[in-house]
Image (cartoon, rainbow over all chains, first blue to last red; front, side, top):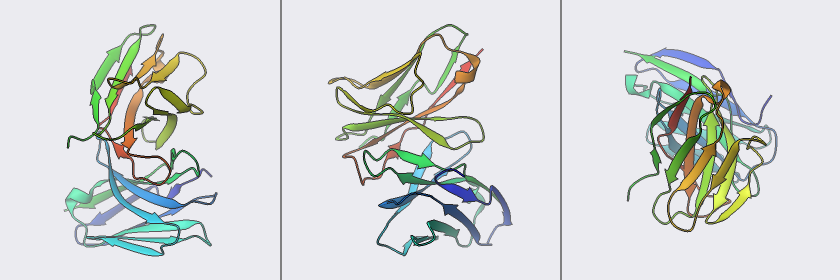
Length: 111
Length: 114
């Protein structure tokens, strides 16, 4: 699989439920980033977690990073219809910072 | 502080024409990245530039594609003799420095080749 693969590919939940998605990567990283993309729009940066961090919070978002398993998870708590979007994890190459994106998780929050 | 600007937002070209996509980074950002997104896929890195320099073009197709980031003005991604397979969304991102910084993305240019 590619660097930065998200799982599941698609997720459908009811408003108020939590949404969890995972990301696996292959090579060593110094940080991992999560982005949101609403349909037909650009990417919005959500959160960056560094390799020496295990967990990070931002509002209703919680990100974990397990460098031993080369995986990260994004949890959205108390989801809202406005959270409907595609979510991507991205990892920068050690030099130059070009980002490698996974295929994304498409989240649908039903009102 | 305005975000990353891209224009045009939508571009329609016929096969064989040229497409020029522009990106103005955030104020104070000297690093620009171009990515391409095919429908239902993630973004794929194309090229990384600093002012007047191409740093990494490992993701650029060998032919027809070129990029520049002049001393003055926006970064330009140029696609010559477009083909239907070039239809995609092209995103530009900028950062103040390279290495460990968050990249801020523009709204993208959606290129349709007829």
